[in-house]
Amino acid sequence: MRTVPHWIDGKPTEGAVDAGEVRTGPVYDPSSGEQIAAVPFAGAADVDTAVAAAKAAFKTWRRSSLAQRTRVLFAFRELLDRHTDELARIISREHGKTVPDAKGEVARGLEIVEFACGIGEHIKGDQSPNVSTGVDSFSVRQPLGVVAGITPFNFPVMVPLWMAPIAIACGNTFVLKPSEKDPSAGVRLAELWAEAGLPDGVFNVLHGDKVAVDGLLNHPDVAAVSFVGSTPIAKYIHQTASANGKRVQALGGAKNHMVVLPDADLDLAADAAVSAGYGAAGERCMAVSVVVAVGAVADELVGKIASRIPSVKVAPGDAAGAEMGPVISAQHRDKIKSYIDQGEAAGATLVADGRAVSVEGRENGYWVGPTLFDNVGKDMSIYTDEIFGPVLSVVRAETYDDALELVNSNPYANGVALFTCDGGVARQFGLDVEVGMVGINVPIPVPVATYSFGGWRNSLFGDVHMYGAEGVRFWTRGKVVTTRWPDPSHRGVDLGFPQNK
Ligand code: NAD
Image (tube, rainbow, N blue to C red; front, side, top):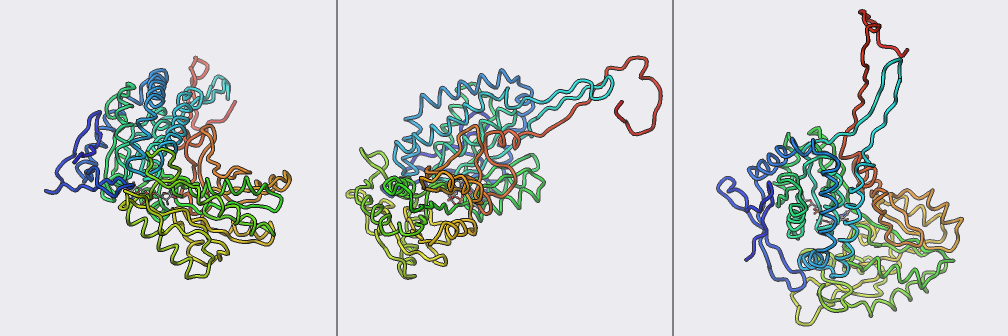
């Protein structure tokens, strides 16, 4: 059985024996249910080794010139581009998503590397000559030190690339704790960083579970933590890292609504609902999980969504023509199916039922087919909870105001979409909706790299969003230098508070 190694100080390692114990976890192929690898779970000694390597590397990396960093980033960008197919297959094998979908994930991560290639521009400070007579001021943004990224299973390449390229471009050294469910992609990224010329210890990968995460959260040499995952863990990470005096941003779960107004192009809206609801088997933090049908459109819209479902091809991620792969694990499949049971029991109308879907020859895979509920109530668990599977709920709203109120009162506030042909209403929605990322006739409004990614309420704990200009702020701290080059006229003792002259 293949072991997926940690990557510490520029080389693979299986880690230390911790307290006489080597803990490992299984890695599965979700389309067959077979174990395909094992991954070591870091203990305290491994956390110390990884952080120490990053700390040692920080001494020189923080002093590297912007030109040197940019050269590495450009080389890394080229390597990512050249290895996109390979990375997509690694992702698909352990995650289950289709290979074309995984290529899309790599492309969106590569965008952030391209942003980071312009670090010289993004990190520029201000300079003000003669703020007081003979005195100049300038500001700089400097790296924090050793920083950590803790990432979820659903984007094993993109989410680490939301964090590491900017953190590293800013002069930090990085420890990635990827999801233990699909750990191989993170190690491949480390190899590509090394090939791009990144010095040893600047990017490290530490596998594991809560023990590894807690080790990083409590380590005195870790200055900042960026987290993406489910809401309860995001809350825990934010509280623990903050209590330990670390800078932290923790992005959590989602329940993304897609509001469809009576004047919308219903075919376009139905296409979008199916694509954004069932793509990656609903395991995207920006997946649409609730369609809000406003006014009289519900029957027609539900009919159009339902008519598209039978042609969604559910198959292993590397199969020709596959549109939707399996979900991540047997436990997750069972949890999704139990939500479908609950929705049915609560009285929602089950229009399409994915519980019995399976794939011939891969009966042990973790399959759930596209599922559609109509007449979903606000108190049903299929509405209140993040299911993170291919289950789409239609809630009927009488008016635009009711729909807006529904979205604004949901505890999650990651993404939202509005489908309409009315520019005035769309404009007002963009201003009034209390959600971090808004799409107008765009179902998955993931901001491009020059903007920043982040939800509101239970979808993000912390103040600063991910990547873009906010990313540069997160990974740096400011300093202002005030200078005077004295001449004899400045001599003389003055105990008063300095005033501008
Ligand atoms: P998860 O919260 O279970 O795990 C995320 C990370 O936290 C993993 O590295 C995991 O090892 C670690 N972890 C898990 N339990 C822990 C614990 N008790 N203590 C410390 N660390 C722990 O999330 P997941 O299932 O891997 O990913 C799916 C979730 O991530 C969904 O809720 C999804 O909405 C969310 N997500 C959010 C965004 C966003 O941008 N807001 C993006 C992607 C995924």
